[in-house]
Length: 394
Image (cartoon, rainbow, N blue to C red; front, top):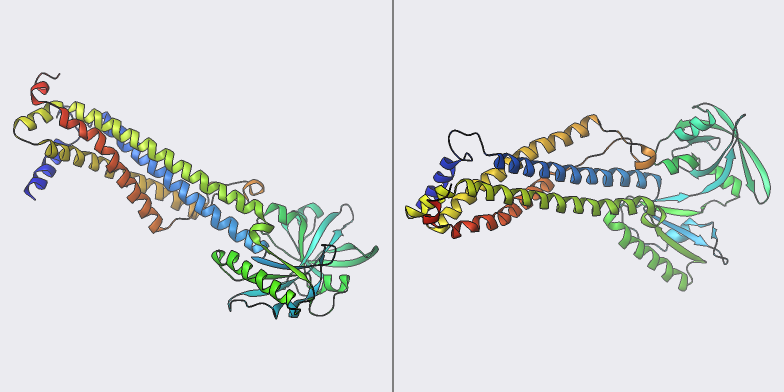
């Protein structure tokens, strides 16, 4: 205990100045700055990637179903099926929400333009004469809520016409989706396609967590396959997860995970190199002090511990500055959205940021452990310094 107090006292008294006439050593400033900048970059990288994953995933799930069940005819094409028959073959979790899906392709044609549209059923739309369109469609077709617009459908080689009314403007934030999808009442495609009561083109299963999607999809497929071979189902069915129906979003998010790992590794390497270089300089500036301590009877281990404590103070200061600045920037972006993005390229209008206190603590703990490990190398040089040699050192 006495030895620890003695080493700590020396580390504090020695400080970071080569002598009393000079300010703090430039090596100290470089090391603190390097550690702080590395921590800032790592915090921002983790927060931005977490924000993108949460925001883009939420938008992808809002525009699609977690699990989609479809029926296939003898030629491999999708066909309508009895939803009650399929649901009777499934054993779903209590919190799962099942929605029947129907859609029909058509053309919206105001006076001066036209646009090919996929009309998808939504329970949020009431009458079959109402549709919800995206801002992209509203801009292209010069429409606003309350406007009426002719819609044309080709069903069984016959042209059918409906006059629809724009009920509302929706925005999913997904540019490709907003360009082609309009939401309508389920009764519109049912009447146009001549579906019987209870018939749907697909069943969407939602209300489950991301971790449950893959296992539940396997269970659903197994249940459908068992029911088909046992004769309880009249046709073959396919199961598709949102990761398969919208691979572009989730592949892109997976690449972000790789990027953040690369950033953390690079910033850790930069911080480690800066700390090692700075501690070498500090040791060189204190060569005479090291020789004097050894001449007075201090052991290599004690002198080693003194310089380790000095370097640890340096690292802690860098981490504190990095955390204050990094978390401040994250908070500013979270509340003000000061950094914008092009939603056509990035799916969101601004840089999203998310962070957890556990993640911040783990990042700081990892940085502290790494710093302690890299400090072992320059501090080990102290054991090779001879008191007799240091007396002649200039």
